[in-house]
Amino acid sequence: MNQLKVISFDGQLVTDSREVAEMVGKSHDQLMRSIRTYISYLDSAKMQSENFFIDSSYKNSQNKIMPCYLLTRKGCDMVANKMTGSKGVQFTAEYVTRFEEMEKEISKPTNNTKLLLETALKHEEKIETIASDVNYLKDTMRIDGAQEHALNKKGKRVVVESLGGKGSPAYKQMAFKVFSAFWRDFKNHFEIPRYGDLPKKRYEDGLRFIGMWQPSTSLKIDIDETNNQQTLEGVI
Image (cartoon, rainbow, N blue to C red):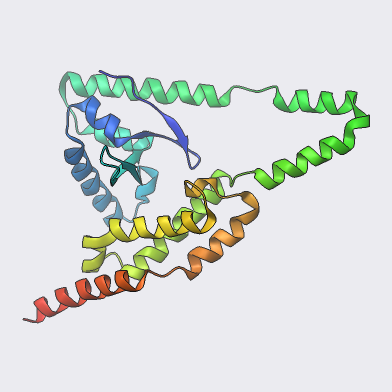
């Protein structure tokens, strides 16, 4: 059994559904179907599914963007609870261990702040240089976890609305395509590799972009045709 990789994302510790699938002996498609079922149950119960499973994507060997999920500790709990036998026990032991290790790593104190203060006190004559460095950090600082979460949440709302709501045929058939187009437009507009790399000073610009975003004309046509086609089929 491979060692599970746990990372910090959007203020939460998570692991990739691809790694989980490999560890529990399932195909990734099987696990994705199970997770989507769990999400539907959580949504029906009006619980926040993103506390368990977070929409994500990756590029496969053909450089094609494919969907995946990031599982929080709660998400791993849910997957583990459905498992029996040795694989279930091994998976539980592994993810509990890796999450605890990462929590301890994050909680370790660092000496960076103390060293910066001592340096500033010892070299007061270089205060102008330090001030310049601070301004540089402000200009290059990326958005924090809370801001990243706010962008993600607003982006989801805008895309779902453009599809006609979660109950629409377009949402069921085209959600991944439209979400991919939305984040691609966002990253291209701000010239960044991922939305979490948005400069902190441009956070308000990011919110404004999301609020004004609309699907392209061709995408709008596809959405309308999908929704209208299903409506006509229901009438017939």
